[in-house]
Amino acid sequence: MDDSGQTATSAGLVTAPHVLDGEQPLDVADALVRLSGLVQGLYARIAERHDLTPVQAKLLCIVADRPRGMADLARCFGVEKAALTGLVDRVERRGLAARSSVPGDRRAVQVVPTDAGRQASAAFHAEVSAELSRLLEPLSPAGRDQFRAAVAQIIAACQGHGPDDGTG
Amino acid sequence: MDDSGQTATSAGLVTAPHVLDGEQPLDVADALVRLSGLVQGLYARIAERHDLTPVQAKLLCIVADRPRGMADLARCFGVEKAALTGLVDRVERRGLAARSSVPGDRRAVQVVPTDAGRQASAAFHAEVSAELSRLLEPLSPAGRDQFRAAVAQIIAACQGHGPDDGTG
DNA sequence: TATTGTTATACTCTATAACTATA
DNA sequence: TATAGTTATAGAGTATAACAATA
Image (cartoon, rainbow over all chains, first blue to last red; front, side):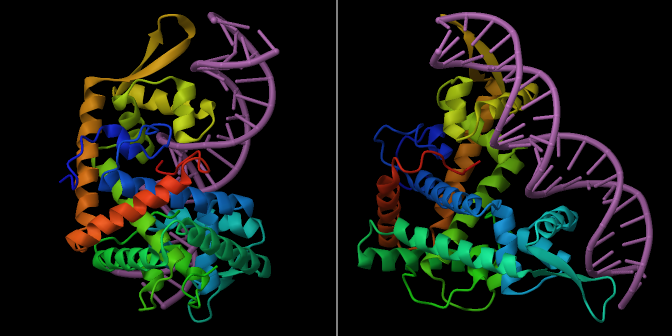
């Protein structure tokens, strides 16, 4: 199971630099967990810079792409639909999105971004893209291409057996 | 800033497969966010399988490696030390760890895993390693090595300007 | 009957501020 | 005074169960 045969202690999965400030080489699992921690931390930090929680940032990005109903959003987040009520309440209270009625189905609502919400989502997206690109700068141009291809391959192989995500 | 020059919509950062079931190629940012979502989701799912929250699993992994004080743990998690009280309360209440007094400093406590906690942490760690390795199976052996090397390089370049993590 | 969304309740995680006890 | 840890309070995010309105 352990791709590299190192004596991995439990601490490796911990992701915190403090725990592994020694110079043990990382096995695959540690490397992935720590990379994922970097990305999540970056995502959260940028969201906070825009006075958003990570979940709110994600919600705004989704509805900025296209308005969606509550059940649809619940599937996007991989959570129960009841959780969406409070989520949307909060972005609505902050003037970043609004519930809009759907002509043709009087039960349904659509969550649409306000202008402020669209601006926040665009600015957030731009910063995340920029900082994530910067994350790859230590790699050579060829290395970046290989890396991106590898990640795309991994993701493609997971389409289907991973209905939810985690970026919240 | 956009390494690949694709017209990235906000939805790309959203990580949810449902949002991007079209066949647009992923830019680097999307790829990293989605990979990180896969890893976090996997981590959370395995924790749940062991009846743990992701944060509890991480806490057990940390103290299984070596007992630690509350302030130390707070630095590991990148949170305020006040947050640790409840965190440790809950794993203690569940019989997975215990507060132990430190001879020589009557203010301090150390969080030590119980036998049950050690077992849970070891089982959790093994499963995460196994499933993360499986995640890389679509890559060729050479591709896996390149990938691991690239991730290690990225992480190494971040040592220092990323004091906290995200795996919680 | 199935679907859409909400309410009520409870739990986990986190932040801030104020506090105690020890060093 | 500084450090270790706790308490109190508040808010976000989530789950479950029960419910309303519409399809």
